[in-house]
Image 1 (cartoon, rainbow, N blue to C red):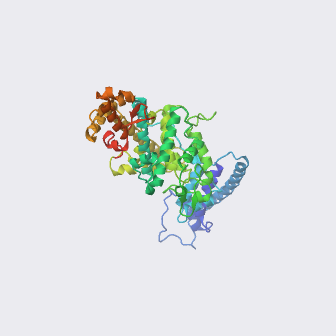
Image 2 (image 1 turned 90 degrees about the horizontal axis):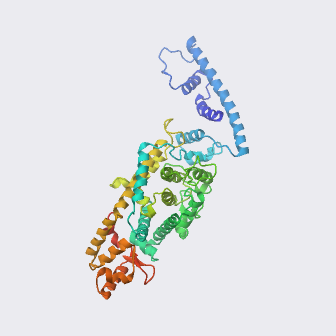
Image 3 (image 1 turned 180 degrees about the horizontal axis):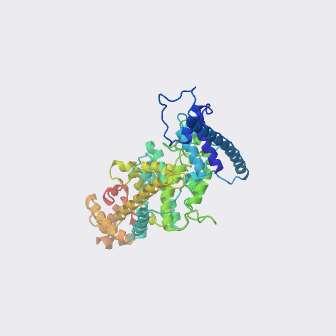
Length: 532
């Protein structure tokens, strides 16, 4: 308290000016201390500078001089106490400055006229170091009714997604969702890689003018595929673990070219090391109006991030972490998404890693539905069906960057109201995507669209019987083609060959059973509006 008071006094005292011992300086001091008083301009008959003052007025000014002197003494005492506390902190290394003092310092920096905010922070940081508690409130400890309803709906709808599908068919649909997720995640970053280009790249075919974009898409697909595999095997690490997040970043950029790893800033150009946090002043960043923590503070912020968002908390930290509760994990998926981006721990790739982290959290929260829906599609499109929807994500993220507005806006450095607003929007997006994919993957609807595709694609009518049988059973032995189509063996094999050449039916081995697949050139019919 004494340290905070000393800082407050130091911001007030400069208003006294060098003439604070005179009448004008005292009046200015009084205005600074009591801004609510009704001060008036001097009237024509008021005493001038050399005239004696009325007794009552002179007495009041003497009172203000006494107050000014008292505050000056309090300031010096506060500075001494602050120095003692600072020395104690330096010796123990355990204490952290309060959220209030950090908020005070940053508010002061942002109110300054002229000069660089980054330079001002650099000059001030030794006096008031950045505290990881600046990401607070990290989570919503009390859920508004609207968010509680969204959590319940999302849990229920995700449990229904894919019900009735054969596991083999569901796995191929999950492959389709990964391509879709890759497409939309790249689109958020301003990179438009078409689904056909992604499929070609996954098959090992790249185009010279799109090589880096295709490599980026393949990397995203592979990393998400590994997340889905680990989740299916119940081996997924804690999604908020810094080691896991660094692994995602490292795996994403494992095959990146030097051009993809070269970061060009306003003052510096450097080569990013995959999997490493920002380090050094040359890797400090400004993201729009937001100023993330200094690079040297990133490890401390990410350690605090892990403590607050751990699904598998360390012993003794269960009360401050998310823990095993399903509802808590669903809500944390939303708030962690923003707070990770707010820290901005990597020089580049934070958006992609953040969305992959959210995908992993969805699995661990029990709403992943075996990879049959994607958050990236919803974030890229928003809730508004028009052009405004495509800017919702960035608008809501920017609003959640805002600092607290008064005592009714939570107790942390950042705004609780804006975090609640972002969380509600994020969960609404998730719910909409789960509902949309549920409609697409509903068994009867998918069966009807397969029949329609056969009709308009020029395939023999008997091809529909093979596709429908495979949809229901998951896979089909090649020798059953004759029975299913009710055609002579040669004719049945010819139709089967045409379906495998079009990649509608695929097999792990040349003579093994076939299962249903959904290539990019079928998506307009089979999954309308998937990429709209």
